[in-house]
Length: 159
Image 1: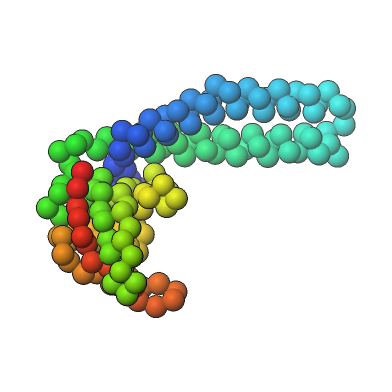
Image 2: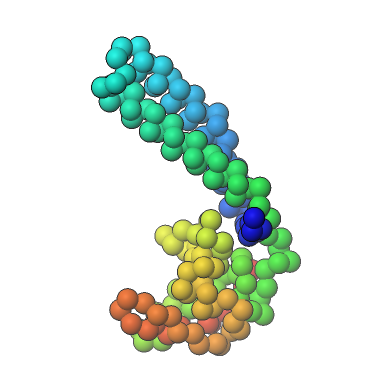
């Protein structure tokens, strides 16, 4: 069996996953169990949409619990000293300048588990993340996108 890849998480990301797991186990599991119990009380479960919906939700919740437990088992908390400012690394806060438009954007490079573009957190496995990983300030990178190649200049790398 192949060894599973370590997942490096920020403190915030680790807490978020732990809280989600706790919520699923202590609240959502109970809620869906109650829904199943109520649906069974309606009688014949062969054509009972409430029962089917509750069982589907239960399967989703249990799958998510398993996924979170696996992720947390292989998780390592990113320490402040892990975050570099000489080159882009996980946890770095990077200011990028899109060369064509001159528009600047600041993002934080995180693992795919905690990436959320609307919060400015991009995955190290994304095209931009892969392109900037390990690069220094003033480096220019090219990223292939559906609309063509986009060039970025790394303006700043900070913790």
